[in-house]
Image 1 (cartoon, rainbow over the protein chains, first blue to last red):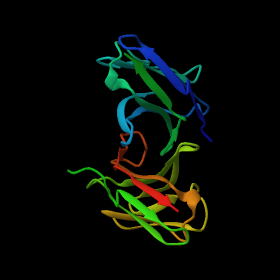
Image 2: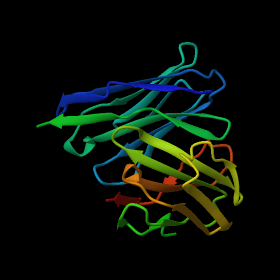
Image 3: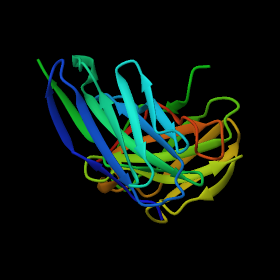
Image 4: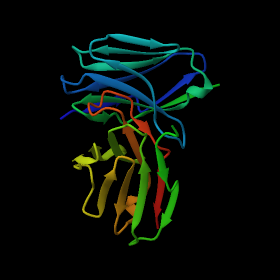
Length: 110
Length: 115
């Protein structure tokens, strides 16, 4: 079955700097890769996703890249702001099921 | 639409008691998921329904856990008897597709504390 690994578990960056979170997956049949953001005490919410026929997708300050050959995908956040502080989860979908990474706690230092 | 609605938001119960968590998915969504979230184990899928039918319940921890979806607008997760290790946040999520390749909309969660 699918396995998703996410790194780092905690990431601390200076406000205004960029943050990169990386995930690897094991099932080459996986073809949909969403990223969710979970603020403290709140529900996970989708922030961006990418399908396997696309290499990169951007939405304002966030972008996701996918390398199917290497089976890894990354979330990039530029010009980080205090409201970016949260836990970020990557996931991969094989068949119907979302397989989740363990999460990355992103801390934005003022 | 009000989104996925879960009740109660918080539940504190004594060990051995029965607990029932409720979920109303977004109208028109045909997939429903129950998740459990803890610091130690992260987000765990407990059970997945498609068109009200349980498709995958391999994540249900043990026989103390059961879930039902009697119709397209309502699902329950029951724990009986509850144990302290069941303390967690339980999320219900719904999705408009059965392929998984679409946004999963989460409810606000039920924080369960078993003492």
